[in-house]
Image (cartoon, rainbow, N blue to C red):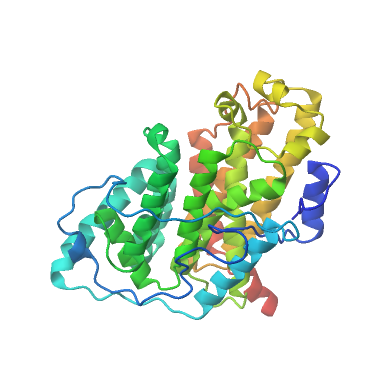
Length: 413
């Protein structure tokens, strides 16, 4: 979808271009975006020990302890001007898909003394997921216990990471703190977790070897962007941010959710769809929170597209809902919907037991765009909120969608 490596006429034209080319946009990723990969890349790593909980048995600290590990040093290097972030991330997705295709899940073998600690760790992860993502938690109940627990562990790690820059103590988070948090991934992927919640994640990545370090490190890079960046010159830059803070979740979870055994679709299609869902969700968050972000001095909208639409920063800070703003928002919403459309292709090819939470997320988040429209595109003073009744109504719809056979299997006939 619309590469901002070159100029386009309008956001609406961008969305039209996306649909014309099948919506096949990917996104950049990693810690350093110059193609060299991040220090400590997971492409070569030692085997993961299968038993991890014993090392965490003595820890009851569920909070982030940023003083416990040595800093992880990593430069944030921009991609060369001749290579878009879109293309850089496409290469990452291809590598992640290849890794998934070459590995198979395994059941971790734990000593009896580890089982109790791990059970407590996963119970805690489930409780956090239930508290902060009730609908998603409910939809995970159809998954096998191994998959469900692993998804909870990944969710909790992502939430803890996000809270470093968007939680109650965000004002005290520094780049060094993020370095230290990222360095804990070394222990997770080596089977040396720092606390109980890390132990749950370590067990998950041991059971699902295709879960790779890179998306986790890329998400930390997204948090670094929030510390240092409050404007985005082009959509290509914004796409990088959306990938890092949300698209990475899809790359983390696809190896756990799995591809339907009856699906002839290639793994790349599933990964691309998962990535698209993360980007679509983040774009929706951005469009919903324009006013809230502006009050914090942040504008997560492409500066060049705002200029083309005749909208200034002063207009945004003043919350002016003009004809120009409404036209601009229509284009932004169309682009987000195009990503949701692409995400459907990947969701339909997942294991049937894993589809419900993905479809629930897709349908629920897409409704936020409808609410922005219902508010007359006033996302300065009105928050687009999906009523509880609509949320509940979306669950059976998502469930029915999850029961449909993969489209690729139907085409094969």
